[in-house]
Length: 52
Image (tube, rainbow, N blue to C red; front, side, top):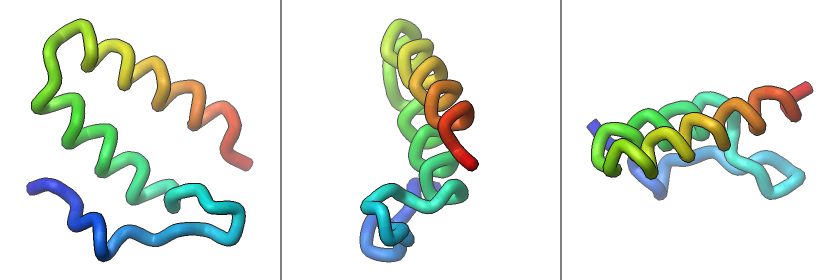
């Protein structure tokens, strides 16, 4: 099930909460083409590396 955009939690710095980011990336990967899905996975890895 896709995350509800109205229920997503935004942090003080304007970023999505880690759990909402993961849910969004997972949903997008399921509906995107293989090429786009691979790029979303790469972006998710970049985001994980920046998380404190």
